[in-house]
Image (cartoon, rainbow, N blue to C red; front, top):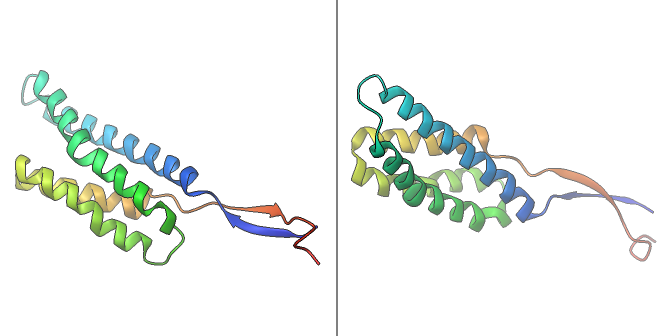
Length: 132
């Protein structure tokens, strides 16, 4: 029996990417809340900001990750994903202001540049009928 090198499935890659994205988004929201805590009283405004970011940035970004998962092995996957992930950030930045727009775009680009997982490769045995 021979061995063949194969990439992980698109669903497994998406689940790893989604877990990293949601973790980074939660840590980013916590950092924003922690940064503003000395200047204002913590109340429901920050919970509303987190819900707004999850709804209008997080979920569309996860949908774009899911749509581009089959192309994860291509050379242009990261640049295309970096550009398309700026779309939800620009939409949310329209409502939140210029500084938030800049922060969201930098967050999306930082995720693609540093946290987006590469597809894992694994060795699998090739069936006997294909090995001659």
